[in-house]
Amino acid sequence: MLEIRSVLMVTILAAFLFAVIAQATGDPDDAINYRQKVMNGNVAHIGAIADVLKGKVPHSSHILGHARALQALSLMLDDIFPPDSDFGQTRAKPEIWQQPEKFKAVVKAYQDATVVLVQAAESGDMAAIGDAMGGVGKSCGGCHKPFRKPKD
Image (cartoon, rainbow, N blue to C red):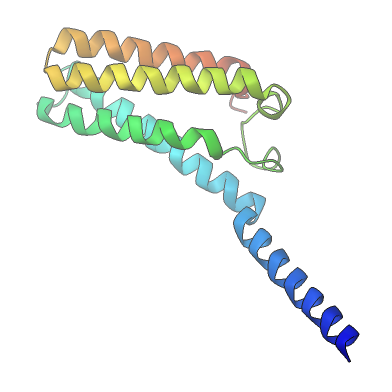
């Protein structure tokens, strides 16, 4: 009787752990869709700041909010490229997973650039904000060139 309980407990525990792992990893398509939404958020905030800097809209008071959003989004990049999310409708190159240290380095460069952008935005100095946006753009390109496929 004790042996049956042990087997039953191990089976229940294994099923529970499998369910937790499955929930934590989720469907790879969901991971790709989420990643694309995060990346689109980056594009939207960068575009909004650029519109202000170019004088297309008069919302200079919004720059700090956009800069802070970019910084927050940059911190998400560390874990939105899980294993098994390198297929399907994604422009992510396999090099992300094949060269993880290089990928981490370019993500860190982007994160650092967004910190500089927030500092510039806090100062309100439009020239400094423009320079910091240049750094953000350079760090984006530093990742896109080696780790993102061109559009079809």
